[in-house]
Length: 454
Image (tube, rainbow, N blue to C red):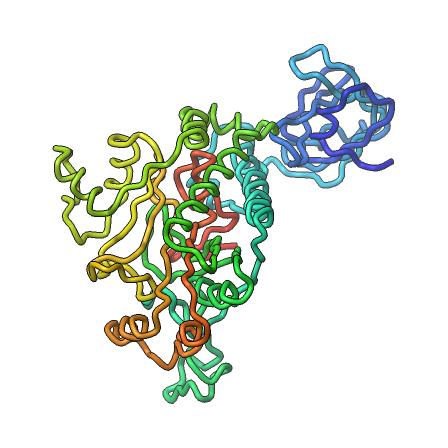
C-alpha cells in the first residue's frame, strides 16, 4: 500500500477503506480499550487523529509510541465525531523509531532562543514547520514570477575574486596553512586572493548584457560582525538584472515582484498563513492586502529627508541630507507618513557603491530602495553606470583595483547599454510574509557571529 501524506488525507473528499500514513507522534492518550494518537508527517500544519483499538497488530507497542516517536499506521479514513473532519480507524500500528522521555519537544511552549539551540529538531514544531514550508512555497513563487516574464535563471559563482559592494566584509577562501610564516597567494589554490561572494550582481550583469533579462537566486556570505535580528553571515539573495532598462523600469519590476509575493501568500490555503496571522502577527493579513491592492509611493531621497525634518518626529538618529537612512526612518515613512510601501530613489553618491549611475546633478546616483511597513527596506537596486569613463573614475576614486574589474569594464567597452537591477534578501522576504521578526527563525541553520552549529 502506498503511503498517503497527512495533508492529502485531511483534504480527502470521501472516506477511504484502506489508507497508510507515517509520521511522528505529537501526543498519545490511552483508554482501557483503545488509544488516540495524534500524528504529523510535516506535510501540513494540521495533524491527523488515529484511533487504535486494543488487540490490533502492533498495539502491544502502544506504550512505546511516545511524543517524538515515529510510527506507521494502516486503517480506514472515516468521518470524525470531533472537531476534525477525518480520523483514521487503525487496523494496524507499527513503531518505527522510539523516542525517550528526554525528547526536548514535549507538548508545551518553547522560546525561540531554546529552539535555536536545537535547530535540528525545531522543524517539527508548528511555527518552524510553517516557516519552512512557506520558505519553499515562496521560493517557487520567485521562480514563477521571473520565468513568466522570460527572465533566464543564471547560477553565478559562490567563490569570487571581486568585491561587489566594496565594503571588504568578505570570507576568504584559501588552502594555505594559516599558521605558516610565509604565505604567498601564488601558492594558493586559485593563485590569487579569493572570497565567498557577497553578491552575484556583477557576474549577473555580464549575462544580462548578452541574454537580456536574467536573475540569480543563491547563497551569499557577508563577514559583518553584526548580531541584530536582521543580519546573518550566510543568506540567500535574489538579484534580477535587465538590459535596456532604466531606473524607472527597475522600480516597476520591483513593485510588481513584491505584489506577486504578497498575492502568493494571501492565496495560501495550507493553513500556514492563517497560523501566522493568528499566532505571530495579527496585522499580517491587512498589511499584505494593502501592499497587494495599493500602488507604491515614489519619493526622492531629498524629498524623504525633507519630510522627516519637517515632521516633528523624534528620531534616535536625527535625519540629515547625506545620511544612510536607518530602519526607524524607513518605518516612519511607510508606517506613519505615507502609510503604504514607498520607493525612495536618487541617493547621495557618497553612500552608494561604485557601479550606480551618476545623475546629471553630480551629487546623486540612480539608486532605489523599496520600503514596506513592518520591515523597512526589502529591496535595494539601481540603474548601473554604463559609461566607461565615469565607471573607471569611480573605481579609481574609491581606491579599488582597476585590473580586478577589467572584465566588468569590458561590458562598457563592447556594446554598452543602459541596464538596471536590484537585490532582495530571501530571508527578509520570508520575514515580510510571515511576520517573524528574527532572521535566525527563517533560516534552517542560521550562521551568525560566534555561531556555526549543526
